[in-house]
Image 1 (cartoon, rainbow, N blue to C red):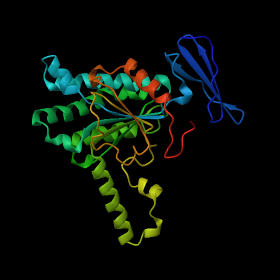
Image 2: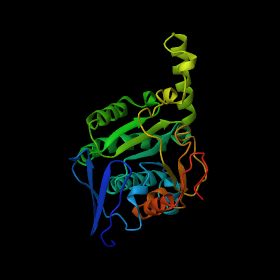
Image 3: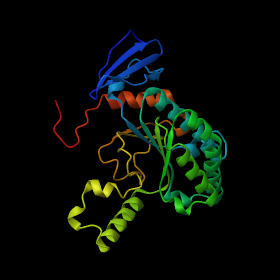
Image 4: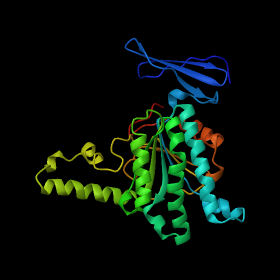
Length: 283
């Protein structure tokens, strides 16, 4: 780490003091001091004031990772879970507020039955096994997608994980399961049309803010950064509405090999960009 530094964030008065492998943030708001937020092992070339608050990830390459090693595809998914845990912990360590993972799309049902069955079992087993640690890490879990078609036992684990972590104040961890961006928009339109039909809404009431209240992701800020692994240059029907102004970073790294170093590269690239939101740049 470098020598002691001070940073300032635009919200409130924020003082960051770099000390060894920790950066301690003291937040002072209206003369009230909150508990210090500790950022662990933050690389010195990253500026926490320019971090994305919300990262979305398309976790691609599990099957290819396994195939290159002569392993069944399911072993790639198993390794991918470990990677996701590490990335979630890194987000917590580095002060990133939200992480959304594309775990299973509406199109993934077309994969081999054995693989789909394994994934559903894996989701359930991981939720059951990791919930206690999520509570310890203060992570808040949320699932988005068409969850009604999942098995009753998996739905029960999903409900329990969301209910038990509802009041946690750490990283907002959203898992997109049986999720499709087009399907999400269609169901939102249907719900709005139904309310108009019932006289609960007027056409003039419909705007972007209202529309967002009918999305699966209601209440979750839009991602600032989308990371896709394995080098594929597409968004695969993921968060079509929410990614409107997200920065996109594609890495050749396969998801099971993604780690803090790869995340560091993505964040370094992100903080060098100028986000314009359709406006004229500063240059």
